[in-house]
Length: 117
Image (cartoon, rainbow, N blue to C red; front, top):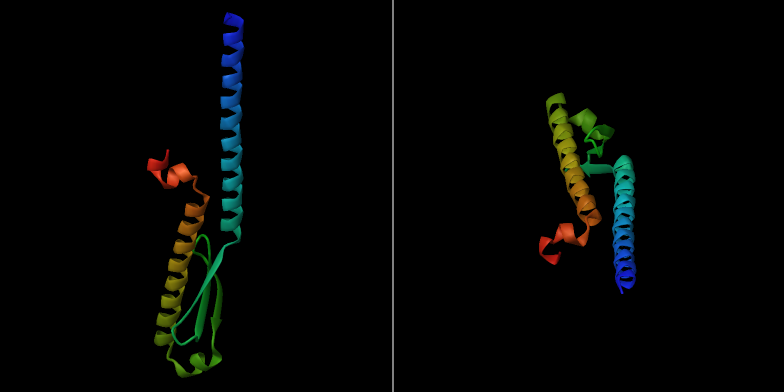
């Protein structure tokens, strides 16, 4: 009878270990996917009139800037500089929202809702 109980306990431990390992693999896969998404993320924003477009990466670095030639001719340098800064800030804010969304999407249900556990 003890041998049967030991086998049952060992099987239960093996099942628990397989379950933990399976959850680890899912988590690891999610982290890899999150890292790939962040590595390739680029977020763009346009000024209200569309004359300036700025693109930032996941680190918030400016990686692209497009200026309408007409705006360059008509705006003074201070106005152009202000619109560029504002547009980069909007792109960066959009980047923050996208990063938050990615992280939220990669959370396990237990992390997203602590009451679910």
